[in-house]
Structures are given as structure tokens and as C-alpha cells.
Length: 595
Image 1 (cartoon, rainbow, N blue to C red):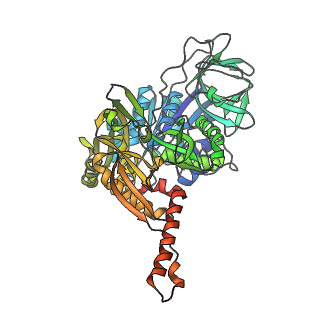
Image 2 (spheres, one colour):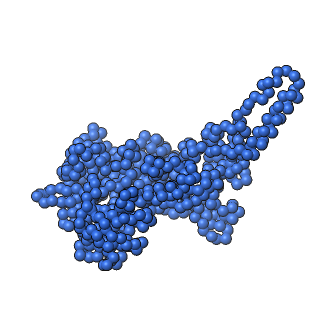
Image 3 (tube, rainbow, N blue to C red):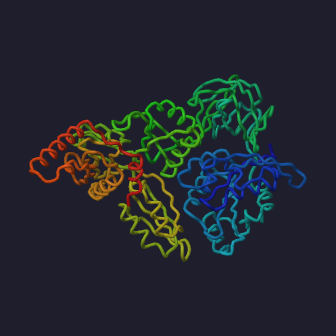
């Protein structure tokens, strides 16, 4: 047990976590030359294409230091703000963390956010200055920032380059020297924390765990604490590149358990595994519940795929515990699910994974946040979907969630970023110069304003330099209205949005113009209207495709032409009563791209 070290790598997106993990695996000979590829732990095609980590990945390494053999359990984590939940789970399973900072970019918002999470769990922090081989590296400036942030000595900061492999030996020896071995009692009742799970179509659900107290052997009769279900541990083992079975595992070990579980609802991430005969007294605490920030409806394009979609989302939820969903129905789209996501990137990734891993074609509605509605009778209703809003005359007030947003940027871009924050109904709370040319701006703003395009605009204004992190504060009263889109007088509930009254007119007009481009022409005129309640605020018309019925009339009396045109008019009127307008998937996505 004294020779086990459990640690994770935390950093802002693109600071080189996955590349550093590659070098550590090479140095410890965990992977051979034939198995090696860039970002070896990022096993999803999506992760490789985008160059981001979406899932935390656990792997065990063996390393000899001063003639002693050590077992190092590494958990590589994502860096994007939308996947911060994965980071919190990894931190709960570790005793130490490598804090990786890019020497060319310095401290960024997500670095600070992840560091605070690690400190809350009393992890030992080892600062690593990565990308030292780059010509644009600023080691002395960035070291000042790290010392200010963590309070460590300058000598403790390890200079490294994950690309060239410089400093990797030093990192490994510091992990062994500074990170404490797991503290726990091997003779106590079994307590193991489930920090992840995956679905295997042959073996059922495989849970990944970290043992806090006690020991477990193959064939033991175990129980999951929160659900009370009992299972036999058919196979336990450690996670190398592949799963390696073991007969017995003890305190500090990180591994997997296969017990033939078929139902995804029986495995909850953050649950505790214990023995049936000698159970532990309490579950492991300190594991946070996820709070979805953005809600959107996901519907199958083909209504027969509904059950298939349900089982696919359940399987995805095993692997991504921050995804939540409840069934809902829409007049326009039929039956589907209202899903909760941590952000827009998370939503995009889930949609992409449903398509790639399960072959499902889905329609995603306009994302929105969750509002609290107080009725005139004093009832409080949580509204995740604009169509769930009570009639206007029953509403006393609506409250929306507010967040504190922290933006770290170069001082050149402070003015435009302040303007962006104020345009999004933000209030500038604080402005701190971290160094002479780096500023931290703190805004208080409604969550609904950052859902759409705040992050994209922030990146383009600051030429990619600004970094952004946010946390939820409280609900505040808001002047919101429901904006409906009508096609030929019929409301399309999937396009309804709850929006700030001051932005409604502008947004409604843009929606109508965009839909006019996207909705294909029919044999009859299509009226596209934006409405607040009974009041129409904008209108566009998709003109009918017309046939020239008067072409065969050459000369003769005008009444002959009139007669043919009247006949056509009646036909169009009849067609309009029976014809319905198909809204293409691009229309739902176009709302996100409205500038």
C-alpha cells in the first residue's frame, strides 16, 4: 500500500494534459512501441478529431525508483468548462494532482477553477510548467503567476515539455516523493467509490472504482450502497491499456468490477461498493451531484425509434453521468426527451455520440435554461421547457438563474469584453490585474445569456486569448416573455423560447428572416410569424410556387383569364387547409447561429 500513488492531471483546455500522459506511459513502459499513438488515452474518434478530452481515463503504470517498485494510478481529465464534472469525479478518487500550466499562455480560468476543486479535497498539488520547448515560452512570468496562485516555492515548479519528453523523470520522482500513499485500513469493511462506468454489450455494465477501505476478491458477494442491490464480483482487475484481471485488490487500488449488471439504473456514479456480510456503516461522502445548466429536447426523426433512443441515452448516461433526461412530448415533433447538459459543447458532443455510437438520427430543439415561475396562488413551478409556462394572467413573477463569470484576458481586449458582458445584461463586479498585461474580469450575468454564443464571441473578440469559467449563484426576478413562432397560424412549440423582453423584438425578426430562407416553398403561401401572446411582432411570407395557368390564353376576353385564376385560387385555398409545413432540422440549429 505504501508504494501506491493515485494522481490526476488537471489543466485548462489545450495545455498538454493528454500529451503529458502519453510521455508518462512511455517512460514507465506501460505501452509498447506498436501500441503507441498520439493521445493514447483519448480512445473516442470525437476526442481525436477535435483534439479535446471528453472523458476521464484511468490507467495503471509501474515504475521503479531507487530500486523500489511503485504502482502509479493516473487519471487524465478534460479541460473544457463543460466537462468540469468529470474532473470533480477524478479528484474524488486521488491523493494528488499535477497542475499543468502552458508556458506560452500562463494561468487560465479553468486552471484556477480546477485547482480550487483539488484544494477542497486536500490534494497534494505538483505544479508543472509545460511547453518549455516553444520559442514563445515565458517561464519567468508564468512562474510568478503560479507562485501567486498556489503559494508554492519557485523551486518546486517543474519545467517540462510533454512533446520532447524533457522533465518527465523529474515529474515521476516528485509524484513518488510528494504525493502521499493511500490512507485506509485493509482490514476494515469494504468501501469503494464508483467514479465511472461503461456499457459492454457482452459483459453488461462495467463499473470503475477506487478502494478507500478494505479488500475485495473475485467471487465476493458485494452490495451497492445507495440502491441496495446485491451482486457477485465475477471479475475484478486493474486498468492498463486493456483490463487485467486480479484475484484480490486492496486499499488504494483503482480498477473495475464486472458482475453481470444489465440495468443501467442500478449503477450510480458516486455510489459505494461494500460487502453483503460485513457492510460499511456509511457511504463515501464528498461527491457532488451534477447540476445541468442547459436544457434541450432530443427527438427521434422517426417516431418508431423512441424506445431505441431511450436505451441509447441510458447507455450514454453510464459513461457520462452529467447527462440527465426526462420524457416529454411535443405537438410538432412527437415523443422525445428533455435532456439537461452542462453547456453547449456538451450538448453538441452528446448529439454527435448518439449519431456515431448508436446510429440514431435525432432533432435537437432550441436550448434553454431552467426558470422558476411563481403563480398568483403562491405556487412555485420549475419550467425547463417554454411550453410548460402557465398562462400569463396566472403568473406573479418569473425568476432566472444568475452566474458569476470569470474571464481572464490580455489587457488589450478589456474594452470589447466589457461591452460584450454588458450587452449580455452582465454587471461588472471586479477587475484585477494578475500581471501587467493579464486581467481577470468578474461579471454577474443571467445564465440564459451565455447559453447561445457568448463563448464563441468571447474567443473571437480576444483572438482566442480569453479564457472563461463560471459558477452558479442564485435565482433573480427577470422580465421574460415567451416568444412563439407560428407557421400559417399554427404554433411550432419546438421553436418557442423564453427570452428577455428587451431582446424579443429583435430576436423574433431575425428568426422569421432565417426561417424564410430555410423552409422550402410549397404550392401555397406560408406565413411565418413571431408572436408574444396574441400580439404578432414580426412576419415574413414564403411565396407559393406558381404555375402559369393563363399561358394557354392568347388574346380573347379578360374574363377567360380571370376564370382560370379564380379556379387556381380556390385550389390553393383548399390545399392550404390540408397541407402542412415540414420544418427542416437546420431550422432548429439555425437559432443557435443567429447573430
